[in-house]
Length: 150
Image (cartoon, rainbow, N blue to C red; front, side, top):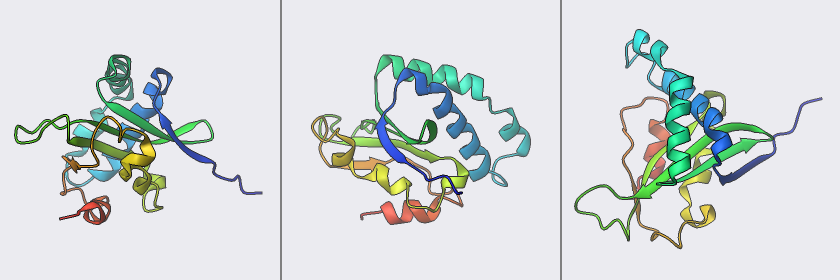
C-alpha cells in the first residue's frame, strides 16, 4: 500500500534546523551538478548548514517556512526585508530562497511558497516581493520563469 503524502507549510522552528540543512545541501548538490565543480558540491556539509540555520532560526531575522511531509522537512523558503538600496524594506520583502528535496521538484510544491498571504506574513510586508535567486540554475529555471511577473 502506497503511503499518502500529508503536506503542510508551517513556520520553521529551531528543531527544523537539521531538516532545512539537509534540504539546502541536497538541493544545491542536485541543482548545481555540472555547473559547480563536483569537489565543491561534495564538500557541502549538512552539519555546518545546520549550525547556520540554528543561528538564523534562533535570531528570527527572517520569515522561514518549512514544507513538511508527515514529520520530514522536504522544503523551505525564507523571506526578509528587501536588501537592495532602492527598495523600502518596510514595503518590500525579498525571497531569499525556495528549496525542495530533488525528489519533490516539478510537483507543484514550490508554488506553495509564492503566495505571501498564505504564509501569513502579508501583515508585516506588502505583497510586493522579489526574488534574489539566480536564474542560471538549470532544473529550477522553469519554476523561476513561472514566478516572473514582469
